[in-house]
Length: 115
Ligand SMILES: [Zn+2]
Image (cartoon, rainbow, N blue to C red; front, side, top):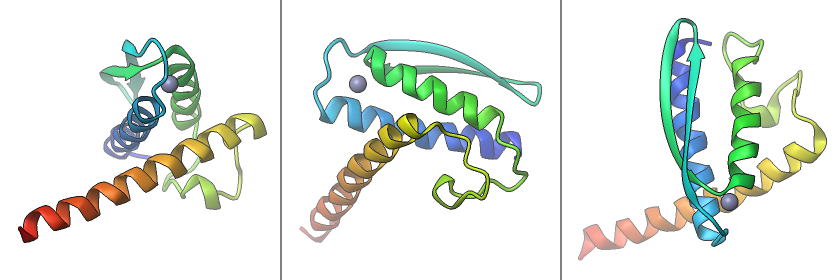
């Protein structure tokens, strides 16, 4: 995948992870720094996450770095899934939770605009 797509994927992961971690009121949320290199580009990130969520995020980034697909399919429909089952379950739960939160926010924002 292109470096642009790669950084976009990480931005999405960041959004979903932070919503989940904050929404679930995890303990010890702190600034977690990580630099990622992809196709000769260096990216420096700061995530507001607890240690456990950060560990799962690092795992997801590692999988993303090693994704063999030029055009990345959605992980859910991937023909060659690379996540271990346990990690995948955790991530699926997280994405579902945050997806719902994001959906709710969208609806709330719609109402705001109408006022
Ligand atoms: Zn957390």
